[in-house]
Length: 441
Image (cartoon, rainbow, N blue to C red; front, top):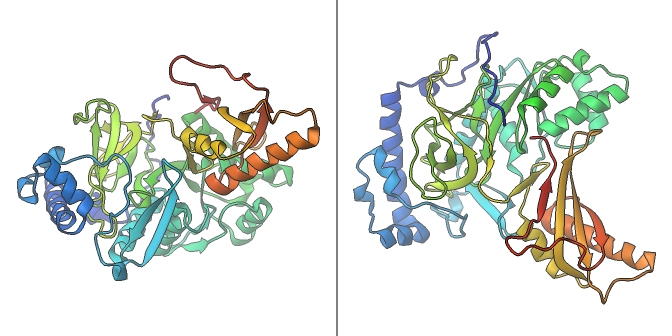
């Protein structure tokens, strides 16, 4: 991925919370340490999972004497059950997404957690120039997915007018933009391009709708895609970052400079590690992003390995914020696919295929981005078992429909299925190649 172009600050950047976003670095470290110390004490006392991990390496809360001691704490490599650190009566909201085994990742929020989440997204929308005078059209999906409600709470916190349209229903999206004079849109970047394409087909010039900015995330996208979006809409396209395990969107965001995403470090502490050794890496060196939720009450995480590859930009940003920035993501250290905001591992697809009679667990996933719709598309090639292979078109069509239905119901993703003859997918003596990703990210 090419390095992002450095931007000139053409308009005054909006800073929602100068007290914390522009905090003296030493004061920020003091705050981070106090919150880390409190977090470690809370999870050791209330979360058996973490107490066992700490005891296994001989570390206690008393051993955390400085912020640098975070490097001595154990990683959280997978999202486990049993993380609830407060009584159930204190949980006010629950969100979830698909996990690495097909079971949902559950994130539980206290009132304080909800406030922090809204705070992170308020800073995010403000970083894109948003104020109480803006109308924010939120085209992320609402419900258990964190994108929709996270963006909603942030827009609400800054006092903006919110159009909670959710995802899809493209013609209505464009009608609402026109009728309510939307100024900021929040959605996946691929959907932003699709909206522009559909507007032109309807005889609407996207630039005539008056958008000024968009906050885009939930899927990988490139600098070239940013240029396409900005050209199509005549706006500035801002990258945002978050993940359900941590809290949802609002963990990091671009300011007007559009060079790296500011991490809300007073809420979520970032580290970069060598993915092979786990050794902490200095600012400027590329590795795996690790995040500790230093204020989270409901389901806190210590040193969560995100699998996202990036680096911390060492230079101070010209916008006035003192929080460190992470470079736009280069990729992942695992085989996770993110298709239209849905996380899918090949192992999940394999697990689902095994349960379908008539197919073998030999498959190939081809991911591409449609030139017409600019949306991600996934095609699943599946070998038919010799005993089930049939010359009858209706039999094969029935089997194909069944597989597509299982992928939609179990994984939440629409996949085109192509049935292929037995033993037609290339075998490997090493690790099987399950994915061909043709997207230009």
